[in-house]
Image 1 (cartoon, rainbow, N blue to C red):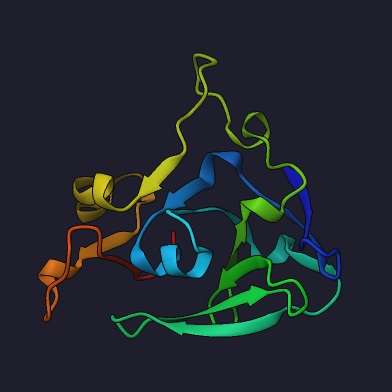
Image 2 (tube, one colour):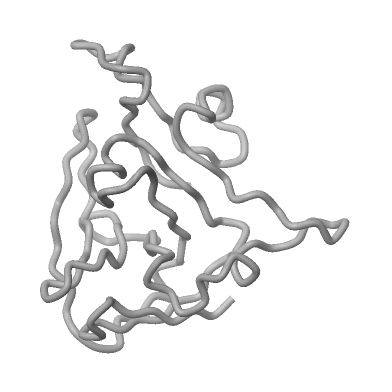
Length: 163
């Protein structure tokens, strides 16, 4: 599916090709802090299809507790998040759905073989088993309680390569 997007003020515009079945929601503590809300909605785009049409995003490099580093792009004028990607030679970009022009649920939630809408895959506490088994391409999630120093049940960290 071809998508276009822009930041809130319009200084940055972009386009990409995405697979609506790859929309995901993450509610790890990193995503909560970076969005200022309970979760982030993203969709993967192959690097070959992603093009910034106008403007130059600012980059913030986030280092997770695991040591994994990701580049987070945002508009330097209005602060809208645009994408995250590997720091060098990304094979894909994780676009922030809120900036897409085609962000309506019916546009990004594809149908299964029976014509029923697919569920958007979530990340966080409800994905413990799936993430641990690696099923469905889920990213590995590690509860803070399992890390040195512990943490609350809602303290999760996204880490590892994205599918």
